[in-house]
Image (cartoon, rainbow, N blue to C red; front, side):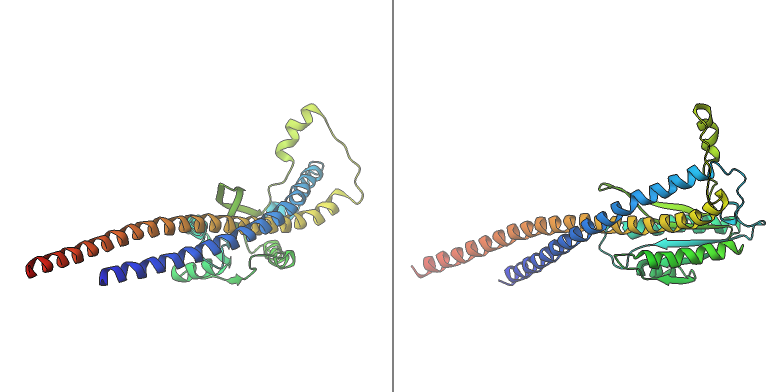
Length: 293
């Protein structure tokens, strides 16, 4: 009887876990759909402004900007922004992003480069605290990053980089490629490789586009380059949000299926134990009746 009671209690606990994980899967699915729509809505603008910068800069090979060339002398210091989630239950999402970040941290340490690390998400903050690595600042943008919040982060990075305090500004996040593929990625926001320089040679072989700019190319790029950086960073946050919800949806679906499988296993164990108990009781009854005769 005690064994039956234990198995029955475990069956109830597994059933409860199954309901919880199923609910979390449904919530993650709804959030993934919303986040996917936001990322899809901003992607054309990101690609458009990137193409525009490439087109304009192709006509300004001599354009001089600290956002492109970086500091005159290396200061042996970089800025690193790590984007993770505030919550767990999303499979290997945070683990893969933090692993990618640590690869860069170790590479910088080996090269003698100091890092100013800033994080978005509680998981990254807790991880670096556990690793005894100082975090300069922590941001909490939530599941729906607003452009205004991302813009403040980008403005700060642009300002400090323009002052020559960093050799590079990089971002580590989970890049969303498709529903079945999310890749931890490190991108370099600053200094920006001058767009159009590599392509200009091959493009000029087929055609040569000449434009008259008003205002001047320099004034346009002074406006477009910071906006492009903000847009790329905002797209990175959106991609990270989509990847998080996608991986949580998959993880909760797997957890629900595992709970169902384990529940079926416990059901079989319960039936066997119950059958064994019934058989034992029948044997005892028959033996008792035989002894009376």
